Image (cartoon, rainbow, N blue to C red):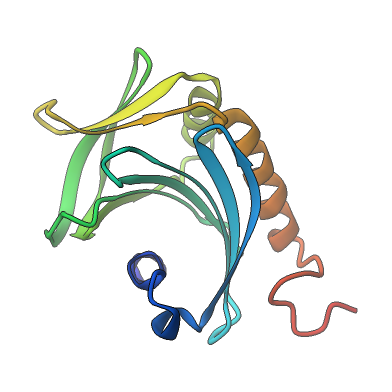
Amino acid sequence: MWRILITFLAFTLGATATLAQPYDTTRLFTRGAWYVELTHDTSDGELWCSAETRNNEAQTFSVTTYDDGAVILFVFDDRWALASRDVDFLVNIDRQRWTISGYADGIGISVTLDDKAQSDEFLVDLARGNSVSVANADGRRIAAFSLSGSSAALSTLMDCWTSILSGGSGLGKKDPF
């Protein structure tokens, strides 16, 4: 739960330089509508990689991988004021529908992708798809995103994740030798 809160705060406060100082972020890749970033929390040493896209409504769709092995899907909208609670939502990738039980808090919804087989299938759908939309449990669409560039972005995300899982030298490592 702390990881989700930290990510929400990093995303929300990222635009304010003074508040964002504990986070050192490097853009690794940009293609189509997608980009990949590596973030280091300098206060606790935690690392994470994010493959993200934004739409014309300034909403963000993010797949984030952490140095402890977790993979979390986030959808952010600065206009939301969500009460902290469990929520069900739908993710439609082209014609494939995923029913997801996740968590809402503040400006975002999230789900930990902890079933490896389902996570792999979901990520393959994202990489191969043309568009992704998010709907509430009643089927009302609340966000839509392009998947242009998602295949290359997700490949870069996996490379980034592999690097931080293996403890490779780089951003945030106290002793790279």
